Length: 307
Image (tube, rainbow, N blue to C red; front, top):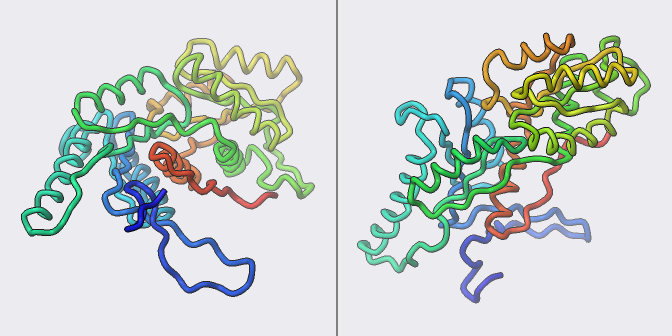
């Protein structure tokens, strides 16, 4: 909705550009409106240089999709120096917003007092992890900042695509579904590994069905943090006829404890693909969660061309 003087606060602004002739004009690109809440990416796990690089790539993708976006990174287990905590990032964002308003007033510039949420917090998680989400929610509350907290990124078809790509990169699946060639090491059964207990397993199962449709092989979800879960699923797949299994982490990476994936692969007796990492869909889904929280219908994130 817009007012006579321009777009309402929080709505994206369309950048002017020359109109193209004909019926098939390109859609005008969106840009973040001035004063829109910041997107704060809540990064779980132990902070490290690799974690920071991954998070920076995710917010870079989000910024490229929505120019002018104020995107920041807060670590659930930060240290207030190299890796700022989620709580401190939210507090700083609120302070800067207030300071900009006060500076405008002092300069005699007509300015509207900031309203609505200061930030939208998006957890960097593919699936639900109740323990981690409780800590994120507590950090938001402790910051005493008006901020919205979104759901996790999945389930979503783009995550099934990302899993397919990671499996193909590891030589565990065909990269192209249409061409009739085989991969000698391609798996005929996939263990979709999640973290977060039974709730996470159920959520991963939805994306697992999408992955199974892409690969035309059975896919079953299991919990890395639940004793016996990986072994039980591996046995179930083998008893159903799968002989060559592969482990596909339904995880972005920072939430994965060191050594856990390798131990699970050894337990299941099969190779494993890499975690999802900064696959482009992660940044696009992060932005989609942000825009949905603001009541803006996001442009549907596009994946790789159909094969």
